[in-house]
Length: 499
Image 1 (spheres, rainbow, N blue to C red):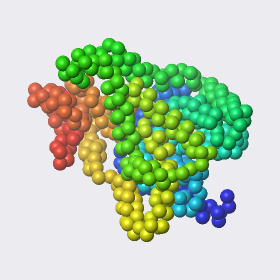
Image 2: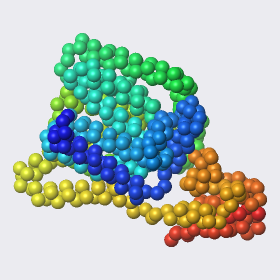
Image 3: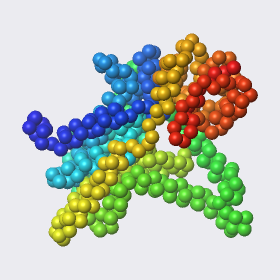
Image 4: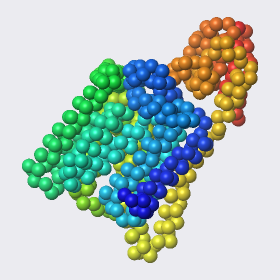
């Protein structure tokens, strides 16, 4: 693409806007998210001890390795490197999302609507300051989806290789990418144009490449000294307790679940439906989380589909259904096994659904113009766009001024040779006195603080049970309060010295 065409490509300006929004988010933000401390600490270990040590510390160390590599750029530390990497991932998501919408309809208005949708989508943009691996997984997965949609149409080997390679790369951030690699190609068996023989040939071609790509990944990890199989086992061990607990809950705690759900009389008639009620409730929670993740987009989707404003060629729509169906299947399995769901885990499925939003809005725009209702449509469109943009990029939370204030007090009053204990990861990180700052727990037991050596400085972010225990110990003379930092809700950070 030459310079003139690039300047007229909406994606170019959307990516620049995305980078600008990331820069603003960095300037307004102050504190890494809790997951971010894990990635920063793993990046430190990578720089100090190498790749193997990084993966031993945290199985999903790929993002930390990239942060460590970016840290070699002049003038930036690990935190700045993490923010730069995050901005690049958001730029990728922005460009690929617009390209996905263009695959269905490349008219200028639809492309512009796609850019506005991704830049003003609240659930995506609220993570701009977060250091998380989800955005990398999302960008690579959406790019792989674009490659597969193109392969579904033209059958070129380049698109098939892109699909496989990008999903293997995405699996380095979240393992469920491998399920997309295995299941999505099955949509080739319902190709609306190809003969049965050609459908099977394309399926075997892409599965052959899919089998080759992980083999190459294993080779690369082996050369780097990392046991990939062991890393996958470690990652699986995180979810195994959830699965065991779920099976135990269904088989071993049936009576307790029945008592909790039904009255004593009703249990005589409904106890056999306990599992059905539990599963239905979990699936209802999943639907609620998806609607929450979509925000106003869910209303646009529901209205557009109800009014049949969307009519797409099956050649374009069927592979998209394959992606969405696989994403929803993964969410259902996770919800049933882990028995919880967050909007962050639902982000890929939500983004796949959001691809339809610009298409529906464009159809509604055309219908409003033909019916003479453009004024009302324009007001409604402007209102929704403004609401989403404000919700996406403006935070109404109170600034956590007590954290930098507490650090400033420590710098001015604390002898660096004095031991420090804290339940706040930011304090542990910025103080530079706690190496394993990523392992600090906010709800740490009071005994861990009360058994500290005499003279130890305790910097405690208020947690109800912990605060009450330490207040009682202070009243008994075990602790000496040195300072406290408050907001309108009361004490937030209290600093004690162990007597």
